Image 1 (cartoon, helix red, strand yellow):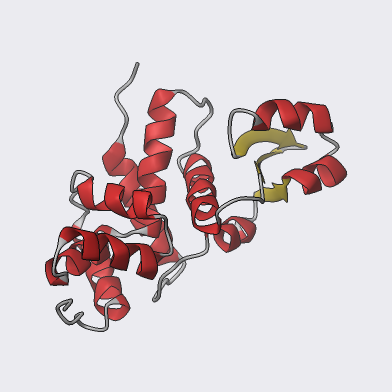
Image 2 (cartoon, rainbow, N blue to C red):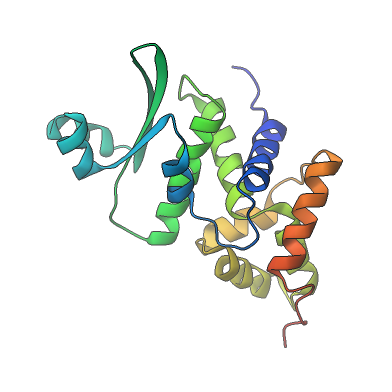
Length: 196
């Protein structure tokens, strides 16, 4: 198995934030996916109606996952489709959609362990940019307060916020790092007061 390229995944997440001119959090991975010209996004019900996928096939796929990304040829162009389960925790669904966006942006063809780890890394950095996580942690009274604040600001689950705090720091190229620092300054209002 090829080792996951987590640096590339984190860089691509930062590039997406810069390209979309994100100046506030939380981001909307669903809106970002809809904005991709080569991507079609369906709810599970919408896929049955629009894409002609049988309900039985979707039920089989969705026993194992909350979303699916796949590539297909439409004429001379390569297209991406994302189908997701709409029910459940909205913060969890946001991570799922960011994960699927990771598969799309990273152009994954297979869905092995390497691809899944890269998509998770992409989603984590897209929803919880490193500079924002670091700034919040520096200003929080304790780790649990930081996790709560990250979950609130980034609109992610506490588990996702905890993972963002614990993840290995990935150095970005200087231009991307500067853009993420600017985003962190705006998101945190130039600095959060110490939690009481």
